[in-house]
Length: 130
Image 1 (tube, rainbow, N blue to C red):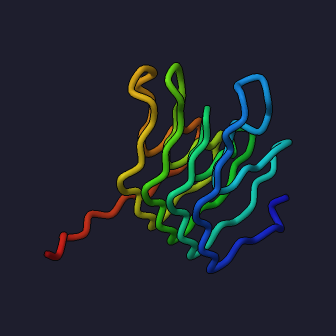
Image 2 (tube, rainbow, N blue to C red):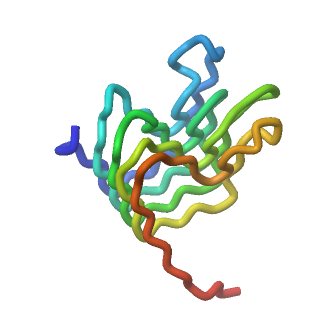
Image 3 (cartoon, one colour):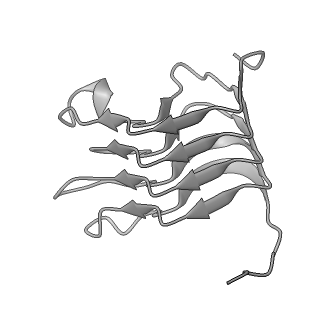
């Protein structure tokens, strides 16, 4: 629900590796079902995989608020399909987040970092420090 909050968590190493006919092929790190729209704040979602969609986050039917999170090194897809390596969201808000080194299956060529519906994404450019 919208009242649910995930705050300050490190979510790493999740694996939704079921076949495509199973609902367990989505959301390697976080999976929101039935329109769930949590607020995800100051979390690191890293090194998760899904055999179909949303390696890091799958909220395809929801509208989460994803705020000040780092979504890193996630992957979606198998040999035939896959999209939304970092996240798949149906709507909502993404603000002050870093998406880096996420990937999706090259055969589908869809959203290595993010696939979304009707949402608000706030981008800010920050200098890279080496």
